[in-house]
Length: 158
Image (cartoon, rainbow, N blue to C red; front, side, top):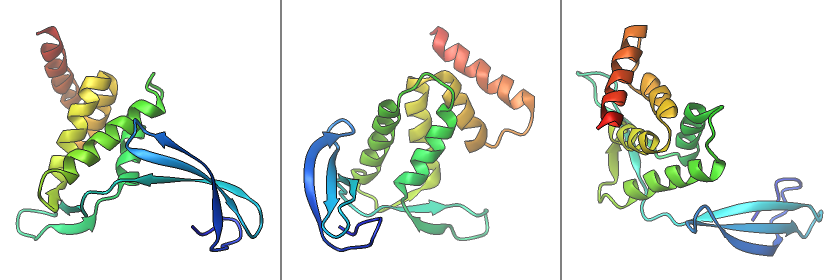
């Protein structure tokens, strides 16, 4: 593991423990060159997932590798200033990633990922759910929010 401070190739593991609900391992390392300490995370990856991003009805979809960091950033934005812990967000993102890796398909449309995130956020926090939906479904007017929020209320009342 390369040291982020001095780029030395050699480091020593000082401590290992489970992280993110057991789906990752957190390792504290010490660089053998400069002595700096840093943390790494090791996650299981079942398969490479490629995201198919739609461009339009007449164009082929664009392909890009699945980026957990990008997904986590989007979820954190939706959850900003809500009473949602980092651990809950990590569990949600890990759950979505696990579902994608176990689907059997190596290419997954971005719409599928968006729906999985929306389902997870709906169960976690309705405000974060509506925030994410507003970007994902491209709300353009206040009436879009009102209409979507009324469907959320109707489902919550059942």
